[in-house]
Structures are given as C-alpha cells and as structure tokens.
Length: 165
Image (cartoon, rainbow, N blue to C red; front, side, top):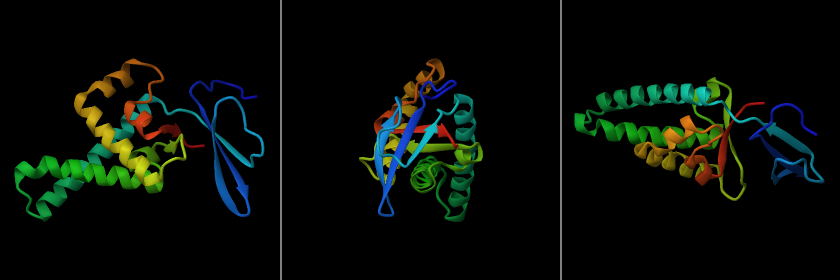
C-alpha cells in the first residue's frame, strides 16, 4: 500500500522476460501480477512546469533569432522561425530525452500513460496540440485555475509531466 500524498500519481509497470522489457500498463490501485519493475511518478507542480516552459521559450527564441540572422530570413518570417524551431525542439527532446532542457533542469519528465504509440508520435501529438490550445489560451487558463488539470495536450497525447524519481 502506498503512503503519503499520491493524488494524481501514476504507477508505470514493466515486465522483463528473456532480456526484453514489455510494458504492462499504468495503475493507480496497485501493482499488477507478474511485475518485475514498478515506478511511482508524482505529478509535477504547476510552478515547476511554468518555469520549465519559460526556460524553453527563451532557448527557442534565442535559437530562432540566431537562425534568422545566420540565414538572412526576412523579419516577417521570424514568428514562423520561432514556431518551427519550437516544434522541432520540443518534439525531438520529448521523444528522445523525455523532456526539454527546462524540464530536465528542474527534474521533470514526460511519461506516456499508454504504450499504444511510439515516443515520437506521442511527442508530436503532445507538442502540436500544446501550440493549438495555447493559441486559444483555453488550456493555459484551465491549468492555472484547476488543481490537478494536466492539460488537453497531455490528454490527447496520453502523456503526463511528472517529477523524476
């Protein structure tokens, strides 16, 4: 039985057999039978996610600025350079490092809550929907106002931002 505040926590369980790891599932009510490994992830606090996002936006802005100057991209195209830089950076970092520089620096991690998709496809859905919902500002308002709201982009991509164990 788990002790302490585990509200919203997810338990990722894997089963190792014949030197391969097979994903069994995510559980909040205990460990399924025949498990070799289980990790409890606690949801990341909103303030850490916000600071991580600010770090990432700063890195993306500076990278897009350098690319715009280096490749003589016209001024009106700068916003598109920011958008495509952000998408490439976020998708690749989430898929291959399970978090961006800001998240990793603050000890956060993106974990999948379903093994139905590849890491790359999950990262693609997560970050593309994050931009879409951020443009609408709807998701940002919900995250700030509702305790435990994980964001529509995480729900769509079947992922969650948690604190690294």
